[in-house]
Length: 534
Image (cartoon, rainbow, N blue to C red; front, side):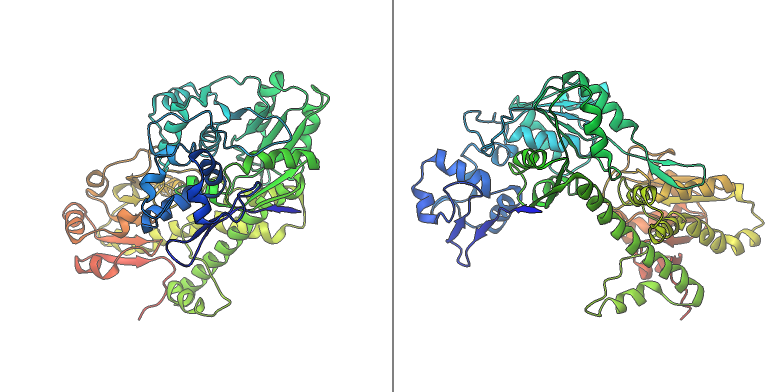
């Protein structure tokens, strides 16, 4: 395994900083030497060492750069594609090449799939002076990108897309074209099998491979960023070898989360696995142009397994917290209090429980390990436990409303449940695999009238409503997502909700509400996982 590292080194004193260059002669350049450079040399130095996060840190902290009398605003006057120019409308200075020197000639890159991963990746590469063609089969999405009307709610994304389009380094289309490198960033959903287990559905990977096949030439590199089962990269290689004699294939799994994609795209460490060493090295040469973290190279099957292990580790730890939640509810303990105290032990870090696990990674990836090995029994059990949490939430709703329903002789069809939160996590728009959808399924199938309010979500299986419509004559509010807008509910808003709701009952599955404040307005507050009665 190999590792490549690049860092911005800031000295202890405000005015003394060392800019460290990854590959060339700027290693250990002092501030005085840096100030004496002409702009072209400065750009070359900064292009390797000052990434997006460091630019932001310098700007926010007021640390001076490029000389004792200049600050970060002066730095922005220098044309630095992909870094400074992402905050301006200026075209990228195409005469300055920020790409690392490469043994293999790479100029044109085709990115297949322009979703949460593909579009940021394509835009980042374009801002680093690669000629990038972004491809998506959705014509509406292509038109939105061209027009700057993005539907993806992600901090910083619109800025880097605009910079890439304005530089003319990024074009988008529904059809691929010839390129030196093809990067596949398409979904890999889970397919439900007859026995109830799940496996990796490679239909979009297979489709992408077939779409690029006519354009792949000898010596090209194909990179798969999509999360896949171990062995898939080798299968893609064998498939493409039917069309060309010499092809390089690598797997470089994405490692970002919605809400932090742009920061983590450049800041996180990356793993690259090739079907051979040359494939891995070719891919590394591309990613090190914008990745500020470490780059680890290995073989493709190891890289595939690493990504699955990362998300499986998190899924298992969430499952542990959720099992604690169910046990504490049963025996009369507040799981949140117990976890908080347990985590004060220096070697304990229990995660928070909740209504389930969602998103495009953690709720799916563990199944890809279960698919390839009969030894993954523990992994399967954890995944099934998390998948079952919406049923636990549904049962809690039924339990909490039973007395109310009997007192007023109401049937389920007479009762309305107001859902707070459709997305799988707080402050994002992503509803993929959201536990909220499964909870709404259960409540609707049981006969309840259900309405969902989520100021972040746009796409959901069920209709979304405004706050007033959602709470009007509702019999229960069920909080399923930890959006800040829910955490920061004011007295005025609670008073407004109180004036519209029929039964003041609220169930908090994320432990985000101010219990005392809601109870002040007469709400009966129930916290999921709290069985404590005093």
